[in-house]
Image (cartoon, rainbow, N blue to C red; front, side):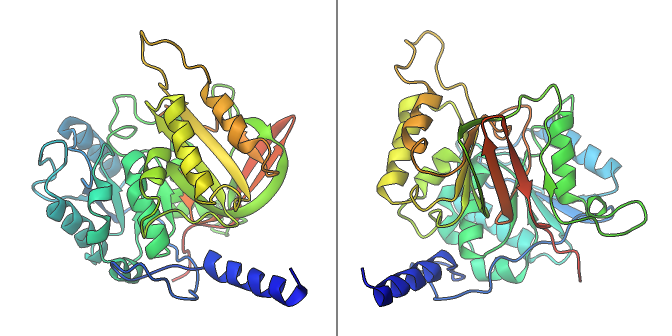
Length: 363
């Protein structure tokens, strides 16, 4: 390829890598955007709205989560029918979509806490108004099936969101969060965590540290890279491929996790991404916890999950780590989707650092 053609090709790749669509349902993408927007952090007195965008909620657990948040000084808002049930869903699609939009558009609401995952977010992604979400940026948390919202809102509204424990498990558990999960949940969400005792701004971002009771991640491929963080639950990442909400990986750091997915199914997710050209575009990979990958009584898989990962990632020439504590696991780190992170993987260990504050601290 000659020099002018190379320049033109690089320019086209740059345009595509910075593209976000803000409309509600079209497949076309505008040429340029102003980049991600950030929500305001939380402080006592703020209003958090509980929503049920996927599976039905456990009233006992959600009540406990509500009490704990109120004890911290937060105001909790929720619909009267929060504990509704519609088959395996927390209400009909129209109701769940309307609840999400009402939370974003309600001027009293400062943050949105989906109660749990389960299943259902992919049924309503085309029913959300992403222009309105961008006009009303608010903190959105959650993991598992909530990944559907993270993917769509990150892609179509350009809003930084937080892959984190859900209220039903953690805050709503009898023993509360694990200390590790609580540390990074509140580090990301609370306004006070961005300032020192004298009220001075701390240096942007943070590095994840692993105490003795939290196994540190391991290195699959060495290297050092930076990029915006994208990803979440792997089955949701795979389910949205070929849609207007599919993940954009060019120049990004990908993280994925999952539960109850056999190695051959994880292999299928990876082959889908490889065939779509998503793996070769990456700057780095953070593989989280993949729990309960084999059913009791079944013959063990010929390939382990880690062997599948090695087949896809070992020769990409980018840093890759695995067993990072995120996902369906008692140690579930909160990760800011859309923020710039740095991944360093060496033979002796790894380091994941958030390089910017993922919240908007200035008015």
